[in-house]
Image 1 (cartoon, rainbow, N blue to C red):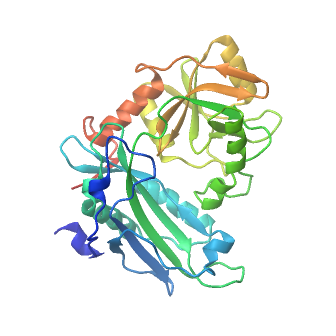
Image 2: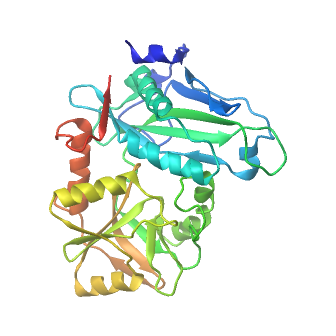
Image 3: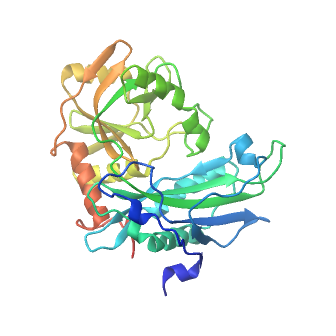
Length: 355
């Protein structure tokens, strides 16, 4: 049975696919023809439907606009060597979404509804999945409160939207990052471990200041005297020091990245020792002085791995060695890309193949 027959489907009769130049993509600019909608009402999630991508009606009083019950995920689908399409690590993304929903007092989502909606949407819009190496179809599940009330309360109604769009590599060149010593991304007991909208809006100001100072992103810290590193912009962070790959341990202030988990798994598969432990700004400086700091890179869905070429700490900026195809971060990215595209065996069962 054609998977899209399992979900109510309304064809978009005004496709914009022919307007897209897949050789010159811009991240977040193009949206595919269709989206998934599913509402939570009367204590239950309703059947999903696939409709033409476009505006959605809403009242100015919906609770998400006032009190911030809005969460999302970031996922990707890839064109495989045989022309089929792989959706990467659906269950891992779903598990993180469930944790976020729980933290934000939002209703849990049935896994079957999530998985079937994703597969049906990708099958309907499979022509939007790029073939060019490095490009992919970005998938954005979004859930927000839709109950229409002024009062401060947990919403009793929600809407899930799943939308997609073709994207190029997120960071085309190595990044310059600034160690943040004043503004925090997340606090203990807060929502730093959840993928909710407010975390990103609150991070804009420090990022804006860093860019004005000549950097691309910030390295978030715990703001202690030791400035222990937590994340890099919207990514998890890795340091290759003296042959060991070090990443901060997961906590309530660090988002559990799906790419982070994948990088750790693949690194150990390559025989690289991985340490999940705290790392201070001083340790970074000292390892650089000793010549043992070999690589620093971010890891996230949008970028996969993003090499970092310079780190600024107060008045000091350290430059890192140049990256090439033999760099650990590049090898890891190549391995993950090969698994997603089907040119390397998917021994971990990460791909869900459709099309």
